[in-house]
Amino acid sequence: MERDVSNFSLLVLIVFVMVPFTISYFYQLGLKKDIMWSSIRGALQLFLIGLILTYLFNLRPIVGIPIMLSVMITIATFHARNKGKELPNVFITILTGLIVIEIFVLALWLGFDMVSFTPEEVIPMSGMVIGNSMVAMGLSLERMKSEFGTNQGKILAALSLGATPRQASHITVKRTLNAALIPNIDQLKTIGLVQLPGMMTGLILGGIEPIVAIKYQLVISISIFSSVSISAIIVSLVMYRFFFNQNMQLVDLEQLQK
Image 1 (cartoon, rainbow, N blue to C red):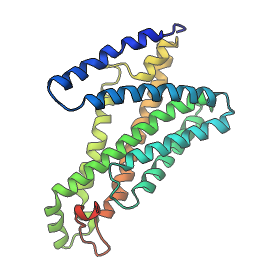
Image 2: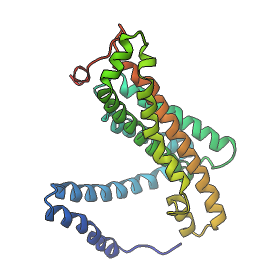
Image 3: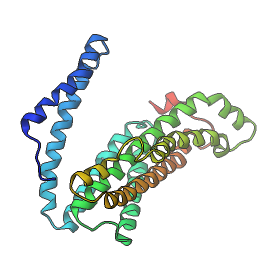
Image 4: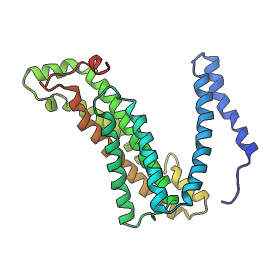
């Protein structure tokens, strides 16, 4: 697909932005500034990353790929950390988890010759894995805090009856994992039926045969599903421990936020 999108055509897209902007204004949702700022910021970020990728693609893969992956993992860590910044060791937990996931997925891709070690293939695909892992970790942190707050009485009762923190928080961890995994399970069920996935669509638009595009889409879809599962497990099994003190007592969430 050699055709380019003109700058004027991009400006016309402002019409689509004005729809939610108008709705926010009419119903006084208080989102007008957020809508405009997020639209402008998103466009600027995309153009900036385009310039950066153009530069990185001209570097040797052994140099360009680690630089970009390091930047993406660092930004993703800070973003996911905001969902549970009051919890101890949350930053190092998320950072370690993202590094482990990326190494695992990249080793699988390269080991079985699914992708080539080039910036054009590794960086976009890794970005999808890191981005979805970041969302899963943030969602797990939010859901875990909510579950501990809702089930505080049940957890305290279990502890008073002699249960360990692990036993008392079993249901909480289980619900946290369900909340993180169900959206990806549903998406995997309907892949290709409800919508054509982004990577597959991009390859088809680029002139790749549909069957080849489907194979690549399966690679990234299964990789994302696996990385999201690992992300939720890492956050859930590591971070629930910090809701208890050294005496195996439940810590008040208000104390964690101080």
